[in-house]
Length: 595
Image (cartoon, rainbow, N blue to C red; front, side, top):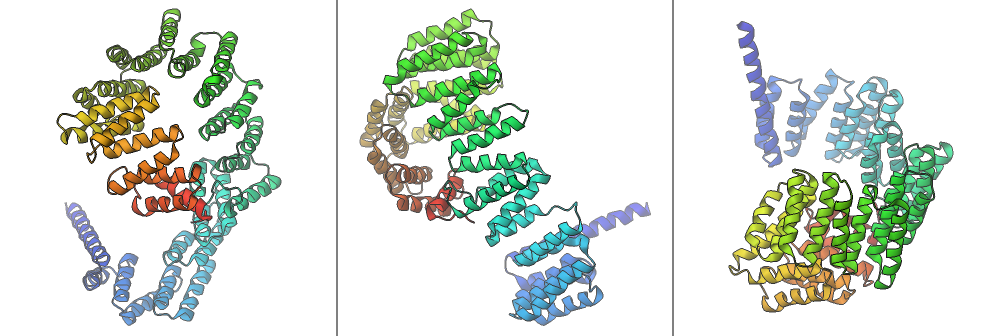
């Protein structure tokens, strides 16, 4: 019983001390240094061996410019424990605060000397203390010594961050590469960190340094890691053929299939480099890989050609699809390719009924899995929407929901049910479906559901007749049907007949994107500027900044104007989904990809 009482009392004492320390920290944060000092004095008196209490007390005195009191405490601790390198750094910093740099340097050097002689296992804590006071050279030295003294220690991340802050790019890249040699699974984290320095300009300082370092390392030690990093660098620079050379080298050395080459082709397509993507995928077709991989290559090539084709090229694309079907057949194996072909018939060639018949024939002909059957039904429903046969489309979407409960495709089907109801003007039912999807396991679907839900709710409260919302939904439907000019005209109807209403900024944005698609860049620019002028505090202003900046860079040849817009996102919209890209592109335009 006595032991229980003892432990309860001990626990209570610790709890009280922790609360008091937190109170003192709060006072420090709020600038109430007298109150912080009072609390830290009591804590230090009760437990003078606790380093946290000592440092809190010292900082309180320093903030109040009672330097003699702070110095007494530090010197007393140094006398008791002259080998405590951390306290020596604190004492050096104490003199730095009083502009006594020579005295400060004496104690910083003593701390380094003390570490070297006695405290070789305390590298991390000592280096962190140096870092706390921005003594980066000293911190880097300790991290280096720590790894020399203990081969199992790995401070490459810490060193890399320091070198980055100092602008020592080669040392930073070298430290990260050393980390990856020991822990290859850190590659994604390292690449994210590199993105703060590497730009899409091959001649930028950071890019040149990194490329030379990788080539040097490959010559010294042909580790496949360096080929992977070179490929990544060339992708950032949009030099896909150079990246392809590295991916081929990786493929030949690794027994893992050509997935890296396939992924590279997809990236090239996303960047509109169809020529490079075709060359990359033709390599897959000419290489002894699995039929699945070859089919994937065909699928990617054909989809890219469809997405970028004009009407004159449609006949050739049909022939290419049929060539693949004659080689691989129209079977379960080529379901994905057949669905793409049906999409091409309906959405590009306006052969909607032919596409539906083609898809229904697959269902009749083949013994399909639930997932395959559902994918076909989703596409049939999409095509029915083109024909405005909403009720029939809803039947197919609902069948998919019921067949694949909780699957991603079922959630997508539910979203399309909501979207179809929205197109029909049945906003209440659409809202009901969207409310369920806001908590979807798919972040993309959840975000889309949230966006559409806000459009409906915001514009129903303001206008109980939902007149503008109905026009907006019709414009969205026309856009889905690839009737861009008609969609532009429908959005214009909102902008002229419902000027100043809440839905106006959405109409400006949607119309601007269609103007860009039809290469009416000046009209798109005007729309973005109107959002910025009339809705500077609204939710879409960061969209307008970003897309107008992209327009200035890519189409209007005005990079300086783009730089100003990226800067607005960086400083005024840190929570924007465009923040990371805006920061990177701003640095590139500034000619400085360094932190």
